[in-house]
Amino acid sequence: LNPQFRIMVTAATSAVITLAQMDPRLPGRSSNLAPRLIGLTVLAAPKGEFPARIWEVSRGVIVGQARAQEGRDVSLLLKLVPNKLYYLVPHTALAGQSAGFSLRIYSSGSVELQ
Image (cartoon, rainbow, N blue to C red):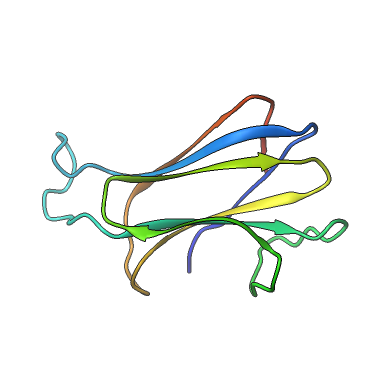
């Protein structure tokens, strides 16, 4: 089950969202953790409907996607608007795989993590 992080903004803002894998070469990290193909999907809840999790993806709900690829990180540049709730869903290319990661948001305005 992939984690989902919910964010919202009170004013329109641009944001760069970056998903980065943990580097197994750093001290204290597991050296047997092979890099994974990682990706990031951003979904938006319809106005007025803010579920705790999104279980099904319907047309028009995906507002950004960095397909799973090799590399230490993937990033998306998005325009976020108020009155929507955004779900950040990190994932690997293969079902059942897990990986340590960090998720960062760089924005021109305030972003609230729920």
